[in-house]
Structure formats: structure tokens, C-alpha cells
Amino acid sequence: MANRNRSIGDQELALLQSIGQLGEASVGEVAAGFGEARGLARSTVLTMMERLRAKGYLQRRRVDGLYRYAATAGEDDVVQGAVAAFVEKTLQGSVSPFVAFMARRGEVSDDELAELEALVARLQSQRAED
Image (cartoon, rainbow, N blue to C red; front, top):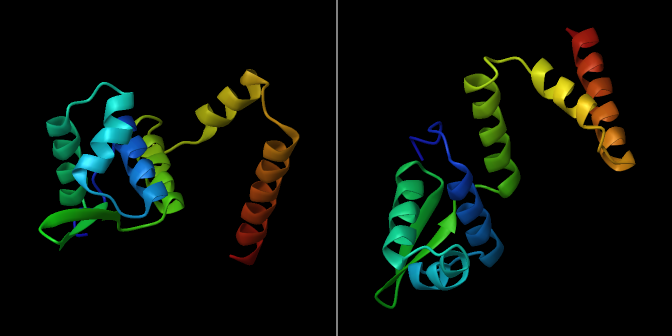
């Protein structure tokens, strides 16, 4: 897990989420489900899974002569990391462009708006404590 800070692409994230839903899976199982739906060859799926393992997002263990892969962290942790990488690399550390995008988009549900308001309240509370 030493390389966990390395970035993760959209397709890698989708693959990781797919494995997370299965709990544990072989390359063949992932290729049959995730790969076939996207037109990916088994070798491509294997390459992606090994890259994710090298980055610390997957672990594998041998079971009856076959490698079984599992996520090393929950989906929330992975998504948080992907968002953090996006904010740092693409938005140069500022969330303002994202907030402006959300405001212009105008497709924020009542639940999403309530969640955003709760996050802002928590940030304000944390700031007041410091």
C-alpha cells in the first residue's frame, strides 16, 4: 500500500468499484463482468488490476492456484482520494471552480443540497474551533 498516493483514472476507479461490489474476484470474473461490458480484453483487465495492485488499491491472494483480488480500502476512501487528486491537479487546490460549476449546473437535488449545507456547517464549526 506504499504507493497509495498515486492517481487513479476513471476506468481504474470503475474497475475498483466493480471489484468492491464483488468483494473478491479473479481476473476471469472481472473480465467476464466488467471487461466484456466495456469491450476490454482479459489481458487489458489483468493489466489494469495489476496496476491497481502496484498502486496499493488492490491486494491479491492465491486460492486453489488462482489469484483472487480484493480492494484494500472502501469505496468512499478511494473516491475521496480521486476527488483530492482532481482538486489538487486540475483545480490547483481550489474547490471554488467546482462549487461554481455546481451552482451553474442547477441540477442539485434537495438531498445533495442538504448534504452540501451540512458540510459547510461542519467546516465553519471546525474553523471556529481552531
